[in-house]
Length: 370
Image 1 (cartoon, helix red, strand yellow):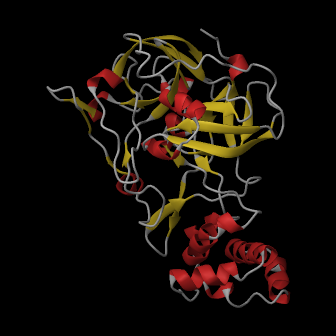
Image 2 (cartoon, rainbow, N blue to C red):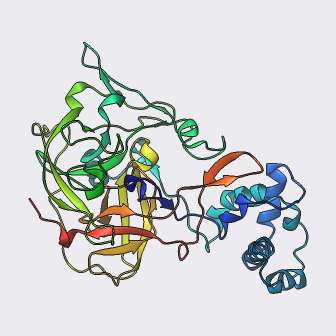
């Protein structure tokens, strides 16, 4: 089982059975361009059947899927692709295929809406103190490694060169209060072993951890780094009950750094309601991820959405797309990455919007408002 603060993972983007890359069976590798052309020339139905055929063959299950695919005449060209090439090409073509979701994660410098930018400024990254070094001139150095190295990612995956290090996310909800997940706070969760989650007084809350361009992260000054003072309130339960925490900072955050998110919507969440999330997936700089919806809504304390989130997103604010009001806290999800054995590196776990376990969001109605 993974550490608790890593429970907020999975990206519900483009393919139907990315588990296939775990144990590839022999197939002729092709160039990336040829693989993309092969997938592009294949219908959605036939592509789905090919995934089903490979899944059945791998698991030793009935060959019914294989028989269906053969009768559809798809032995050429996509069945010649190895699993890694097929999954990568499927993802590359996902933006042209309505039946697949899309990786909607957007960097700070790409956000155009002033309202979303204000919410992004209020988003804060939680770091261990050992990853923060403040120079005599007030400049902050983050002791981080590239996402590619931190997660063993294949070099063609998204954001591989960006730094990775934040262990959780949060949202400023009062000048000196941050809302996050309960399992991100050592005093709330049972996550007390080793250095998995540091004590709240050792946790560093960093504002402005973002990309200013595709190649450069924003400089951070000591004025943007805050220490925690105390865990004011919160709860965490392994049985998927409420998972949230309010943390008081050592001092208020000046309004020119961030303004609190005070617009909360405690009305019942609706099935298929459109939502978005802002946080720090896999500990990389801030990402705004729209394009999601509520797909399960039966549990009292949380709902399930198709949010593009990873470990490090735990504690992220989840918002209603129509009103931009805060409706929840991201707390759990499915596996982030799967092994591409053919390339000896990891790839983003790909799922259909109706597949995998979905991303679990604690309802804001269960959180004590400041």
